[in-house]
Image (cartoon, rainbow, N blue to C red; front, side):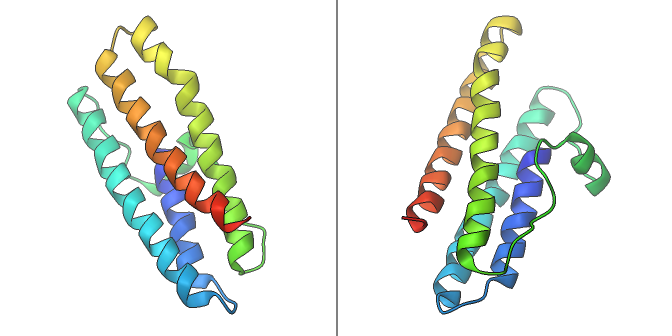
Length: 135
């Protein structure tokens, strides 16, 4: 959930700060992406609660738990934001792929394994959308 929240925040930053001749188009694109991430965050939090745990809910917790970097070291153009966000999406996809069988085999939790498989597919589609803007 921490990765999702950091990515959501970075996508919001992209939405707010993008500049250039493609501003309006990318402003709307980033809005669609952060809206989808908002739904992902809610779903992950609910899954955490279904498993009997409390969802992290502070910025401090998110920064301690995330695999992503909070920093974006780029210009405020769409390509720079898209490249940074794509790196984060791909990082999350790899992390999810690594853990699908862990939940199924080690924890015997097929529900969570299935859930993160679906989550991975959501990120794969979002990454495809980002990647398509760079071609």
